[in-house]
Amino acid sequence: MAGNIIELTGLTRKYGQFTAVDNLTLTVSRGEIFGLLGPNGAGKSTTILMMLGLTEPDAGTARVCGIDPSADPVGVKKRVGYLPEEVGFYDDMSGLDNLIYTACLNGLSVIDAEARAEKLLERVGLANEKHKKTGKYSRGMRQRLGLADVLIKDPEVIILDEPTLGIDPAGVREFLDLIVELSREQKITVLFSSHHLHQVQQVCDRVGLFVGGRLLAVGDIQSLASQLFGKSPYAIEAGIDLPVRKPGEVDTAGQKRNEIRDALLGIEGVNEIREENGILHLACSKDITGEIAAVIIGSGARLTSLNKREYGLDDIYYRYFEGGDKHE
Image 1 (cartoon, rainbow, N blue to C red):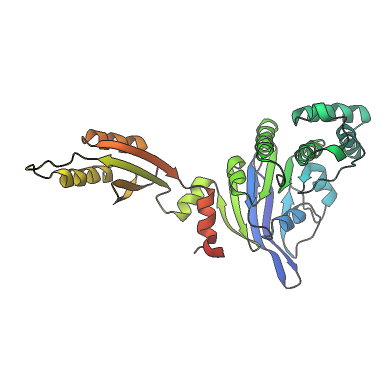
Image 2 (tube, rainbow, N blue to C red):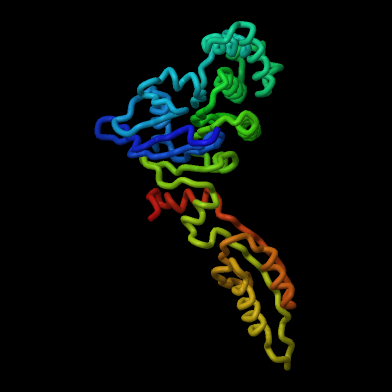
């Protein structure tokens, strides 16, 4: 089923004189992995609480799975799984028993609950630890169990609020891979709230940059880069080497270098060229490294290096918040 599964319109939440979320309008498509990126205190968690019906907005509306969480918070919770930063379990119960308990609370019979719990523990890599008490689980194991816990009711949407804090790098990579696999296989919509740029870029289809309670920009990495870096989201560097003029010979290197520049500027997608220490820096609208290499080699010059750099989320983020302020 196509369409938007999350629709936030003019959503605002204040605590006294402090505005935690300021006129937020956002849509997330069904089956999408959307990253809500911003520093701690940006308003991400408050937004999530309003989406779950755990706090009410002062203005605006939210619809999740077609439901208004303020009017029907229980209805939203039946269709949305939420994994907070800290997951709570009964530490004296095993991972399997915790999942069965959650499944029964969501209306499954004991037999169906156990079958589904066993399947999910296998899926999240905890089958061999299912009888261990959760009080003995590591941080990474608890987060995996938490993911199984939100999936036990077969939700349409899962919301992950800083889910990788305290997990070692290898565990983070495995956890993120698991999220992507589950989303793609089961068509689950994922809202991933984090301040970790690399993790968001690694898994998300689109990103919303959130700061001071306001959503500053939304889009995929390429479109955000195009917005910020104009028509040149690709930076390509080419090192060239021209023959050194021998005594008594006419200096043709300068002429050859100008011919190469003119030829490169004639390639569709090359917007600007500057040279520094024998390196040509080309601002390009698309990836044309192959065409650039062909022109340089065809000119008779020696291509000593060729590097492509596509602006990533870190460039975009710091361009917006360079010096701690919003980029204008």
